[in-house]
Image (cartoon, rainbow, N blue to C red; front, side, top):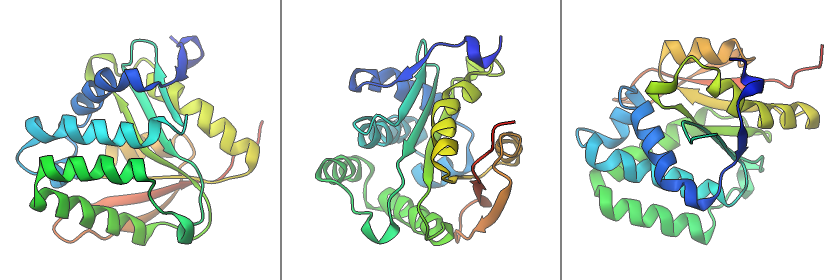
Length: 203
């Protein structure tokens, strides 16, 4: 089935539970998530996925497939020196911190700081999460949920960026135009790459 055949829509807050389940299943073997949540994956991953969804869904930059088996969560371009979390985001992460504990939250902070150090100073669209439930992989769903924001970025002439900690995912993104890479230096963490996709011209 081609990605054009999939029904893709913007997420709504009511999608949180199913989306969090999809993301938790998708990242069960991901090195970055293992670093962030430590040895409590089953307890913390669902809360972490829910927080990632909650802080983004209001922006209408979260896209899901029919059945909520794939999701792409984006942050809109902002100048880094003006990127301050909203009150809603602060409350969301405060709840996660209380659930996760100080050690896990410190690892998340270290991870975010390492990613921020590798990111460019100019404005860009940031792909914070791309996940497909393992039972629905290789059906074109990830490409389909990526498409709306990639086309929007291309139309505005903006870069798209993300980070990944697996070579398989890096190859997936390279095939979709994320061809510029730099290392993310995370002490004690997995090898991670910051990838950039310049705007693509229509062929």
